[in-house]
Length: 131
Image 1: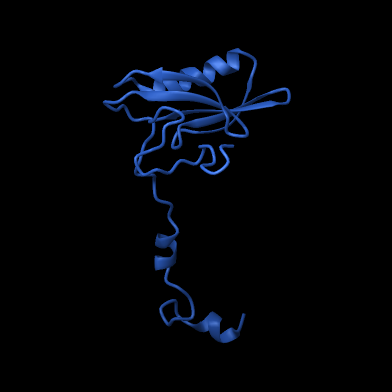
Image 2: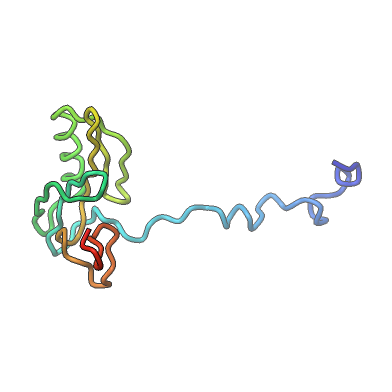
């Protein structure tokens, strides 16, 4: 650091002011979509393996308390001997492991296997080869 920088006042441009725009710009935004908010349509509890294959599905009634369903599901998996890994209430998903098995359990707004209105889904089969 140069001595001239030490002597410069904080508003001369040598250093950024305490409330600089940089700090305001890196504040994370909260998600606008809450997957655990109750809706007028039914939702789906979906269990997948780590290749994305659907292992089990359960329909959740419309206007159900999805936060309560999410927590109760996590507790059921813990009681069944699975170890809880990462989880995200902002994504409505948690991961669990038992031995060498790993599962992704999540709440989603659409029935598994049906594409969304935008025709995009991260965990659908390939349209070309069907895998």
